[in-house]
Amino acid sequence: MAHDVAPPETLIERMGLPRPLLWGFIGLAIFMIGDGVETNILEPFLSGEHGFTVSSVGTLVTVYGVAVAAAAFFAAALSDLWGPRKVMMLGASIWVVFELLFLLVALTTSNTVLVFLCYGLRGFGYPLFAYGFLVWITAVSPAAKLGTGTGWFYVAFSAGLPTLGALTATISMSLFNLDFYETLWLSLVLVIIGALCALIGVKERIGRAPLVENSEDVAATLGASFRLLARDRRARFVAYIRTINSIPTYAMAVFFPVYFTERLDWPLAWFLILTTVIYAVNLPFNPLYGRVGDKLGWSKTVVWAGCLACAVTLSLVYFVPMISVGLGLPDGVGFALTLVCGALFGISLAGFVPLSPIAVSLNPSRPGAAMAAYNLGVGGAVAAGPALVAIFYPLVGATGLICIFVGLFLLAALMTRSLRGTQPGFDGVPALSVKETFEEAAARDEVKDPSR
Image (cartoon, rainbow, N blue to C red; front, side, top):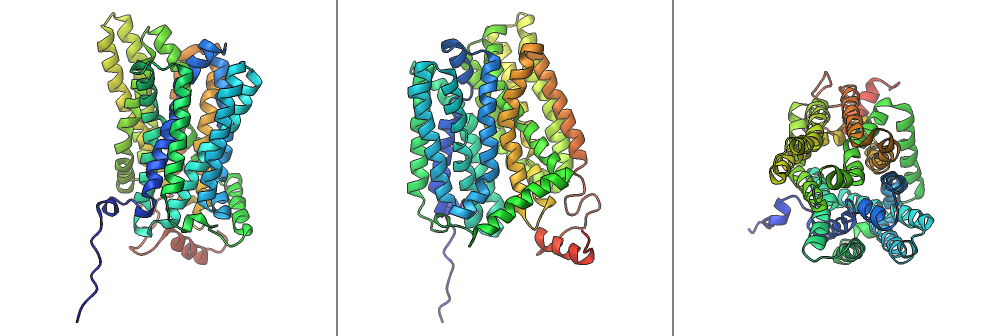
């Protein structure tokens, strides 16, 4: 009698990638490369050719960041209501339309109001595209491989923004001699290619339809998100810590180009290379620190490997090149030492990875609501980083800003200590059984303690 034999897994499946969404991962990476091209060239472009100051560029990116934060918060609920693919289409359309207006109208007329309007509204684009795809991953991935699929999302996302985006800008200007404006057109082309890869290449059916039967479920999820933020201090701490985690990414893009070119007298391309090194080294350590957190404790990992390590390594990234120039070391030696410090900083940024499961543990019966708060922190950094530059750069300069960021990392360490007691099997919390999920554990505890 013949027995059915399951076909062997493909390499893609063994890697944990949902095969129906493969073109989505490729498209996301290309899309985010295009979005990341401008990260480190916007400030020198606007200040050099359109009369902006470092502070005014910081204000511009803050406006953009507010839009990013709002879109990141609502992306999950809209994906449930309309379907992830439609949300991704909306995000890509917003990005392309307002980038065209930014390039063709706002910049060509040097109209400050139009620059703020077009660039700010474009901020709604990439979070809807990227986080819409993240919802699609969660809807399609088998439960046993959901964590791996989500991990690949962050690899594709971070590989583009800012890692390969910064490298693309470097190659564009250094090897092909394109100017800032022409490089921004290149970013638009890459975004369009990435969006087409994802929206045309992915044939999977689930993400093409709404994921809930009626809009009341979406409203309930959003209501739970707001209530969790309002009532649970730990949820607010998660949002604050996640914001602090990414503040240097967006703040350094505003004031580090000036620091490199004027204070150190190093070429702008070197800063773009430093950015590429920081976030390229960061990528493989994201899944590694996820495992470390599972073994040694989420909170402990975030405190030591994330907050405190970032405080030290960010200081090295700033002060080592300054000291090397002051000592008269050859520029090549000073830059090599700076790259080493940048790599250490990239590793330290990965120490915040366990913050995501901490967020879910705060409301296991509605993980979407908890992750909405986490996403708010992700988007908040896009606004908070440039805002700090706009406010404090004129007052305390680059050195003062670095001291502020170091202080924020130390504050994040204190807040993270209050998040102990969220991980099963640690700090007195009962471990889950092999088959038990977070949600089942929450239901069990509610039966024991109805007032919870």
